[in-house]
Length: 183
Length: 317
Image 1: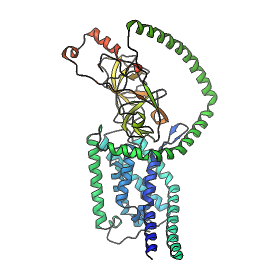
Image 2 (image 1 turned 90 degrees about the horizontal axis):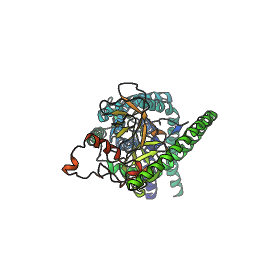
Image 3 (image 1 turned 180 degrees about the horizontal axis):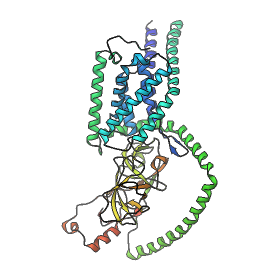
């Protein structure tokens, strides 16, 4: 029974950190160079998609500490001001979390609508913080384009996240069951 | 669905511990942002940036590989789309360049003779480090790219970064195996430049747009669109004579530069391994302002691209 407990705990920890690891990976994809036909295409804000999805569906797997470190990692990777995205993600998620009961578990279209709201809040906040930290700069066009790409990509990426979540839940159950049967 | 209690609109934020933690993390983020921006030129977090750039280099190289293939494939498709038109333009370019090559060879021969007659010291050829960009420009607020070479490869802060057709930026942050390049278009980029046709000095200031602004232009200088701009080397960091771009048609109150090399489109870059110019303290006689005639001579004696490392100049090295 001790072994069962250990396996169960290890398995639980692994599944629990998966969203965080996924968000870190997404931060790296976000800064990867993408050009189509020689034109630079803005990458969707993948880390925010991970944060939003798990904050709404399984907030216990996306605590504020994790969100803070995801934002910091993105700040360091992009070479931008440290704390800019961390602050934006924390405040946006905090605001969205107050509406989680309205958004979560009511179908994909509601999730997408909530995401659009989140993107609007994040865009506004990051724009204000960037202006305060960097001064006026003509980055509005690029930011707007990036957010549009993010909103349009979410339905597909959100579906992938839902598949990952289902798979991890099933795998978690299977690990425990098979361990108990072997013993 | 998330399990929540019914204590009002702040339910989603969790219990008191979670809310307290949120407040602490928000305050911490604000403090980090303020600390980082208090000294943007030499951030307190440079060490963390270097360490994370080094650590993430293998993953970034791996992640950018499939995207690079996609970029190359789409680039090839777009290129083939207008192949015939491009071939005609290239033939015309080639014809013009052949004439320029003959002129350059003749001038090189002439200059070598003059240098021989004057006994001018031969400038060492700068060492070029070839690197590959492994990240994009860094989101809406930053124009910087990570390259896959670092101090182990001889890269140092301040070195010039070039594409095949011109300067794109300078090395800002150096890790052991990766470095961050600050592009000319970034908000924090300031590069002293020389407008060749107007014989005027100015500062090239990035503002996150595609075409950086020219500021602090010498007074009384007539500037026209199409004039060539190169580095002046007056900062003692970048060598003189690196091609930057040309004056863009005036679209507002500022003069802007159409860069020869588009930094966001560049995959491979060359980093010039040149020693930064150290300005030694000048004594009073050397410190005195030159006469009008001398000033012209001083300007002409400034080192060119090939002549910067180690070559004596009027600025003192």
